[in-house]
Image 1 (cartoon, rainbow, N blue to C red):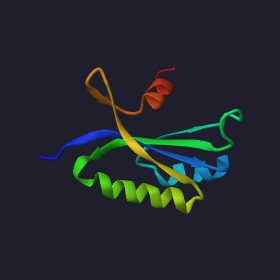
Image 2 (image 1 turned 60 degrees about the vertical axis):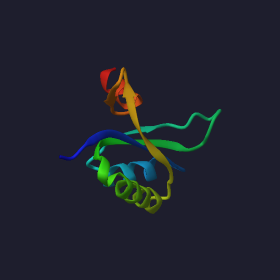
Image 3 (image 1 turned 45 degrees about the vertical axis):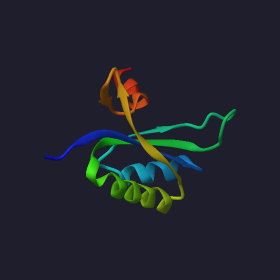
Image 4 (image 1 turned 90 degrees about the vertical axis):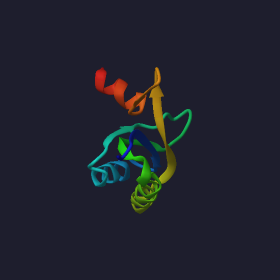
Amino acid sequence: MSSTIPYTHWAYFPDRTSAEECARELADYVTRISEPDPEVTSQWRLLAARDVEVAGLEQRHREVEAIVTQHGGEYDGGEATYESGHPVADPAIVQRDED
């Protein structure tokens, strides 16, 4: 029996075009691109979330990192997110979908 968890990868890009090209290559993820906050950074943020097999998590990290790097981005890792004891996709993604 396999176990899956919702997991979100974080990446930063120097421009919107690079972030969008990366998001297209991560078609099996729910992706969100955020404009930079000039007071904090000039980088565009890409969140890419989906359910992943726990057993294949390290491999998916390497795959996503390679895709991000290929598009000129900086991979900032990923995380499983839980609310009220239940796993959910990244709250920033879920919240935006509900708006």
